[in-house]
View 1: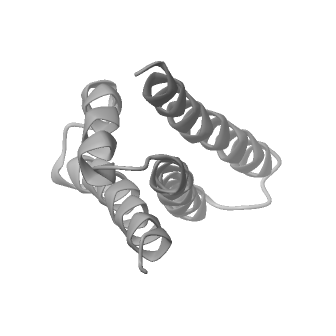
View 2: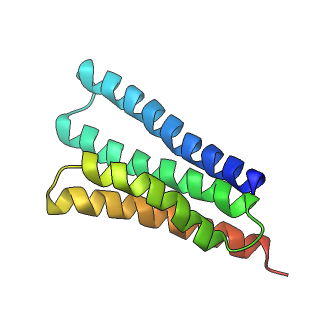
Length: 117
């Protein structure tokens, strides 16, 4: 059980660190007027999807059994703050849902390719 919790924490750390790194880079570009507002928002959305995909990759790679269930447990921890912090519009909910779906899809893809024998 301790190993699973460690994998959960590592996956959440990957998501948070990559999200902050991408946000810092794009915020700097936006601050120095290298990119426009719409580009800034789109890049943040895409980088969020990539960060969540990287977290899903880690869960799919490290978990031996029931990877989708384990990914769902991690997403419950991540989903609640994400929904509270997002814009409460349809587009805000779609952004959060797309990130969560990328986490699950990458996790499932990596897990099935790893155990395909």
